[in-house]
Length: 206
Image (cartoon, rainbow, N blue to C red):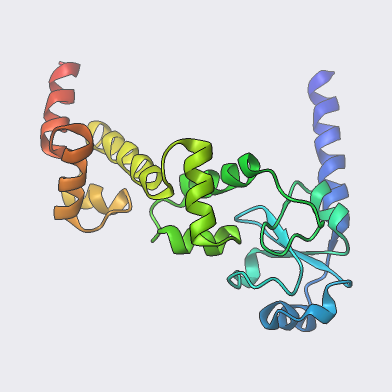
């Protein structure tokens, strides 16, 4: 039975990953907070939301404790499908730019309602704002900020067509709580206001 074989494989794979994960202790968490390089040969930590793993000494923004898992070595983290940090280089290898940017776009796609700007993304992605901006634009042909706007406006369009929410509520749901700015940005990017967009699409459905 192909389905049962696949299920058994997935269960086995998940079990292997869970066996790789070490225990988060107060000592390890403090080492992460302190960027303590003396622990670099003892464990690595990975962040579930970004799928990136680091050395304890990494200078990136401290993640939420509940989003962190511990690995005894880099191979375990790689086996669990985490990618090495661009800043601290836990494998001493350079992560391909395209893979790094894919991680960032995936994060934006899932978290566009949060406060996101270049500095926030750089901290999350463990890189400098300047390098992130240049690399993102080279790989995607648009800037990180433009991509964030693109994702948010796409969500707004869906809300406008599929719901009867007020424009202000849609702006908030799309991650742009400043309604006047949302309307201005929407018109700049689409050529019409949110209300006009809704009306045109509602008429098209009739």
